Image 1: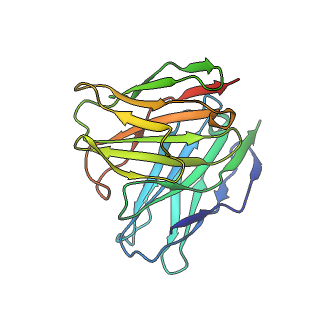
Image 2 (image 1 turned 90 degrees about the vertical axis):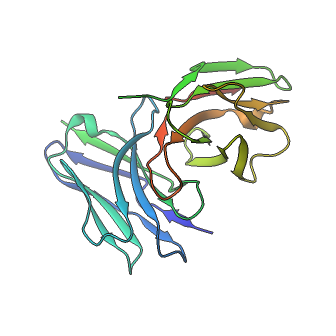
Length: 113
Length: 115
């Protein structure tokens, strides 16, 4: 069974700083997708970024980028020039041959003014 | 941008009562899902639904749970006899393609409180 681990329960940085959230996963599959979801206080789940395992190039979406290390089964999220609106829970998720998403425990990120 | 719509946003019920949570997936999507999140915990998969049948379910999804697509637009989750531990945020999600091809679009969730 796949597992996703986020080892940082909470993080806090100053506005405009760069922050990196860690995620590791375990799977025996070779083709899969990895995701980062943002959950603000409204508790809606918002897709931040997606990475396909067969692509070597790291995904980027504006201020958000990932460092995907397939051999190490690591998928970290970097947020550059952090903004107050980035304050939220961030969940790493895995999706392989099965249809379901497997989520990590989440990292609570606080951006301080 | 199209949205997954969930109603109600909040539901309060007594233990032992039946509840139905409703979802309207994005219109051209073919795969539908329910997830739940107990307060302070991670999001957990409940069930996936494709071609009018359950394609996968988790251990959480026992005989007390059922899903239905009663018409061409709605997708419902029924809990027959609610327990205190069913209190959680329930998320509906949908995707256009199969498991490897598309991202999931989540609704805003229904907060279920069982008293």
